[in-house]
Length: 154
Image (cartoon, rainbow, N blue to C red; front, top):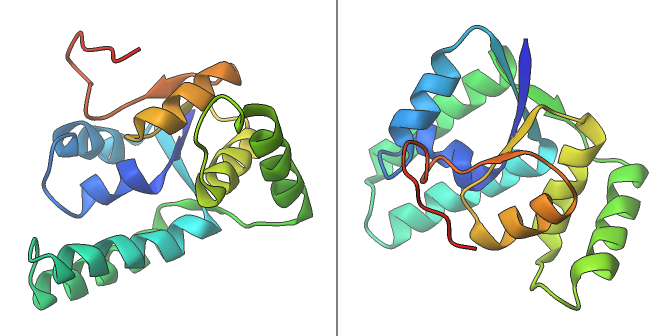
């Protein structure tokens, strides 16, 4: 069974139709793949849906439905990587190691650190900057927005 670690930028596509949703639906629908998310994703997801509501991309009802479905998937489908001292320490090392060349946000460093701790087969992410850093850490990456295209941005 393949293990995919999904960043919030990719995971949100399961609950809101946008570029990359078809790819994420195919990943999520496969029984040969386990999906790992960090505890941080559980917070970021709520924030992402709230932003979509604020900017008028979704209705209040759609936000509530997305939260219900996500919470159910957290209980029944996802493997949750809880944050601990090791994740925090590695996140600091990621920022120290890459912050001079790349703009790396704190929460992205925590996501990448949680991913590294799980040693997945693949990191699924739609954040181009975070993808660059993950690749420099020798992590195999899938961007659901590029799946099926020949597009490379670096």
